[in-house]
Length: 242
Figure 1 (cartoon, rainbow, N blue to C red):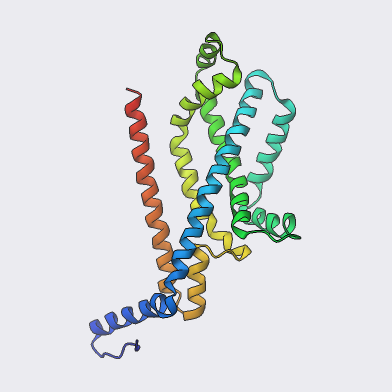
Figure 2: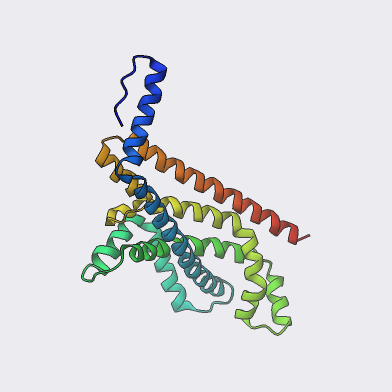
């Protein structure tokens, strides 16, 4: 495709737009960088969130058990250390440490490294989200569980956590969106995620506008979709309370 040559300003703009679009996405099938990067971004985000929720729930249960009953003193100390370290250091530094230090001497899948790094980071924030939700549940709910013959773990699993989940759902949705955007730093370990894909195209076409704006729009569309999905889920949970 030839560069724009029209002298008419309007026609020149459309020719310029078509040429830059062709150069950035059609020529040499560069659009595949975007699709492949998007799949990696979604994969890392999904599994990192699952790991984060798993870690967060466990940490939240340990900390609330200690706060309410004084149990798990040693585990609570470890949990507090974990929260302090993870929340006190940048996620990109944690990513680099896991890749270059912990797995520096072995061949490891970069996607796995990113999932572990972002999952461990997310777990610290999810833990505090769930801890706040659990502490907000009335103590009478714990007593009701005990009166039914449940032990602490059963009371937490069957009675307290479902109620806490409803109250923390907006915060969890925000954490999911934050996690999606935080994965954009995965390029520091040469993982070709969505952001890195846009940068690769930019480096080959010397055009920053089209690839980077496209990447930003894709993130925006995904975030808007997640917000709509979380809003729908919140409304359905509110209807179930009636």
